[in-house]
Amino acid sequence: AQSVAQPEDQVNVAEGNPLTVKCTYSVSGNPYLFWYVQYPNRGLQFLLKYITGDNLVKGSYGFEAEFNKSQTSFHLKKPSALVSDSALYFCALTGNAGNNRKLIWGLGTSLAVNP
Amino acid sequence: GAVVSQHPSWVICKSGTSVKIECRSLDFQATTMFWYRQFPKQSLMLMATSNEGSKATYEQGVEKDKFLINHASLTLSTLTVTSAHPEDSSFYICSAGLAGSPDTQYFGPGTRLTVL
Image (cartoon, rainbow over the protein chains, first blue to last red):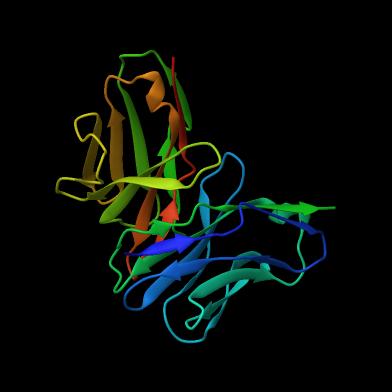
């Protein structure tokens, strides 16, 4: 069965420090992996995705994620956190080919960046 | 590009009434739209997949007669919560897929429903 795990409910980091939000997955076949961010009382915004190719994916707002097949992970990273990055982050997965396959969602990680 | 709107952004209704939520893709055509429900500080729960011109596909446990979905055009899908009850109070979010990038969903801002 396909699944996504975000092992941390909350991540706290000081402004200017690097941040990592963890995501691991389980899928048969090749995964399509996504990161979305949700700011308070707003809809989700697409950050980045991995479909194929380079394992390091760069996305919006300076975020990047590294696909690691051996560790079945897709951690979200940013070299220098901003207070404005504080939000709820979701990792999601869809298996096999695309065409609007439904997403399997992690439970979300609340990121707090302290000034 | 790839903007999805929802209307209304919030609604308060009395128990027993019906509420319609609209989801529109403003600058692209969406053959498939998705409806989610999100509880406070929790992940998204997929309710149904809405395909233009055909019946929606509901997830297990979602009552299709209570949550009516219509996808009449390539830019509009509606979710009607019929005979709403307080337990239906939630944040409802729609998303749409972009042609040419079918695996990426673009989300509406959500609708906060409160049933009194």
